[in-house]
Length: 439
Image (cartoon, rainbow, N blue to C red; front, side):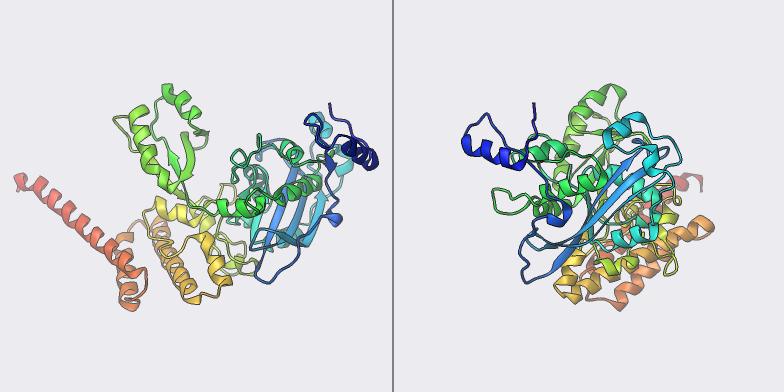
């Protein structure tokens, strides 16, 4: 049983039983305005947005946001929270009855939200000011927020529930309230701002190695990962896949899991031994799920950026419009077997900019322009089937190699052209051999 006492009685109990293993003292989280900040030091500061939503249910297709809170933190290179740049919370009328269990959980009633709305311009500006957005169980919040603000697609996200190894850090479980108690804190409310403040305390927690949870979370979230799809897995193997951490994608009807690039070879061996010895080949898609990590003021440049007046949004076009979940440019390129991200992964770009390593920034941007040109050729083919994107790609690659022969990515483009030519020669030889008997 948990009993909440005032501060004086709690301190008295702790002084009487300072080392009793059967007694744990929990302190309520600080109010936002009283949140303890670390000392500001010299060096770059990133803006990290902490986000939470309360909704009428779990399905973004039928349910609605009723409460949202965002706090934009200033975080130094060591992962210490050194300032609060902005904060805001708003209630929203879902124009439907709030289910009783949601009212019981959040304390939000129909009367509380009646006639209330979110200023979407203010919300979008606040979210866009952050270099990275963080939420606990981010997939849930992303689904609702991207439906509310389609321009948010492509933003950089980190999930504090799955992008940090809580078990490895000595914690038990990954539920926000349970984790909070394990650092000696509690929060009685379950509202959007209350959960944001709770998450801030958790992210600021110092780990045994001296760093913070937030510092390790951001480092973990930036790693390159792959979506490994168990393509064509037999129905009777589903229990094996589930036990290994695979999840069922209802839209694409495939079992999948996310893993580091280095794990793919071993996973393919396991897949061959236990799931599909005779094929088909599992599909592996690079995931840059946290978007292009550009400084906040540069985000209109990103693939999937929300400023329609500045550019043609290929992210929307290639993924079917506003109602379909957008995917990262790297995923589109991988699915179409097009070159991309040859010099730097998306998460590294902000670091290069802050370090003023402009030559490397320039090469990364050149590759993105090249990739976008190749995507445009594929897009053109959708409108005019007579267009041969292979011919267009070869011309683009040839010109880029001629213009930029000494760039770091030129060798990879040359190898790609050579491989394409060899494949065409092989295909022509096979076709000639097939037709020869009839000539």
